[in-house]
Length: 232
Image: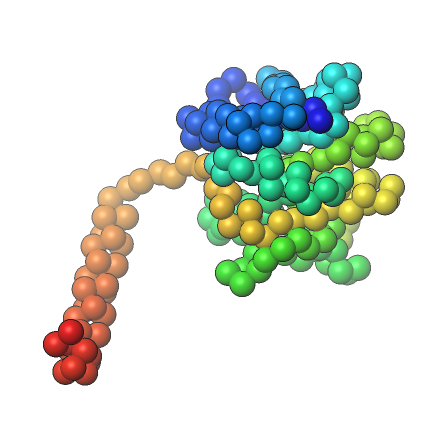
């Protein structure tokens, strides 16, 4: 089996991503020496073009699967093996946005509106969705062989008056060819999306207030504990 690990980037990648990528490749090679891994990247700012070129390069190298990883993601070292174990043409992690309010990036279309698909604490296993982000997604190259170009495109939704990313376009196009998109709720809980945050002095006051509240709550709990529990 040959797996192409493809990550589009601009000019730099996050340190955490690089660390996790090395761990994933090392873990996969150590535990599955039958899997041949190729690493491919495409630098630029036009994500549609980057993904199309990476898909074509993976197919040119006769890869069986493509593991798409965005360069701002954190992920477990056994992530590739876990996604492969599902033996599905498209399976991905339902990670979250990297801005506030934090929301899941998987969607279901109900016929009238787009609704976000959450991964709750009790969520487990696979679930089919209309579309999801490609920050950590495994696709069979068989999917691309069945699709007409372009594989990726930015589309506009007249339903909620907004643009949809190239990943949503791909998922919908693949579904039309009989390749549904599945999300793995279990691995989704271990995926992190690296973002940026601007710290100001107001956050000091918020942190101090939160600390005071926690201390008061802790003190109240301690006072209300039964005597026998307090003795323990």
